[in-house]
Length: 361
Ligand SMILES: *Cc1c(COP(=O)(O)O)cnc(C)c1O
Image 1 (tube, rainbow, N blue to C red):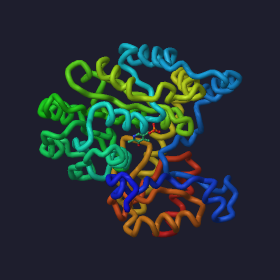
Image 2: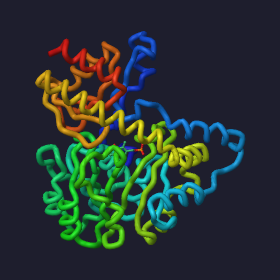
Image 3: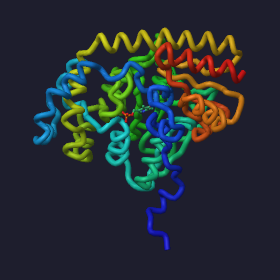
Image 4: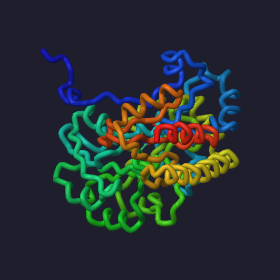
């Protein structure tokens, strides 16, 4: 007797970055002795303006949130120069992935993405009894050409993590336009842009400019640049008629009132955004230089993390680093057996990682 939804049988549970508290318990280490460079979190902490906004909101916790999230959605629409009706909020962009799958596909439809990408696409697809198909990566990059060739009559949604997590690579304007022009119009293309504010290249596509002419959705999040991963808030930007249907599918109070107040305030915290960008861009250079000195191969990244070839089993490298109080992310679950993903940390954190790496080399 099998009591469960058969399509969850093949799901490998999502293994998140190891929490600092957990490693502290296991090794009897003080939390202050541990550094976590495993979940692409902001090493500067949360946006201070967001924290202040949460404090102001606390005595209103007896009230339900505004289920239309008018204030936050209107501020987002002003910033993005789009209509408020084009914005849908989610409990993290993770929740919006589920909402998109439920809104635009039925059981047994196909959902297409790449191999070695964000694992939630596959998990949420299977939980919803849809079929997950992948195209091969080329040189650690999404191959939009291969994805286009994998489209069938049953394909309903294509997820493109841009930049890709865990490789840090991106698809450019030219590739995206040619892709959008060749796939059938009945397919929704989702650009998951969790690292949008860290992009440091000139030919990165502005997905919002395609909204008029193509059936696309852009996903953004407050988890990374604004340092609010613990609050769980993200948003989708899409065509008005799509947002309307997604709003039927999401739970009415899917975003809590602290998260929406914090996100509202964070949008004005331009100083924090600038500091975060400056840190990541400077430290990325520092890490690149030191990895090169150690003759360790890595994949150049436009995000706040770097995929590193550790030339050994990723789990054993992970365990070795844990013993030094450093949490990185092993990449075997992503089909990248000899790789780890390193989140760019503060300068001191990065120095500590490089020093340990040098000892191993
Ligand atoms: C971090 C990340 C997200 C963010 O998810 P939230 O649920 O908003 O925290 C989404 N997609 C990708 C590819 C990511 O790396």
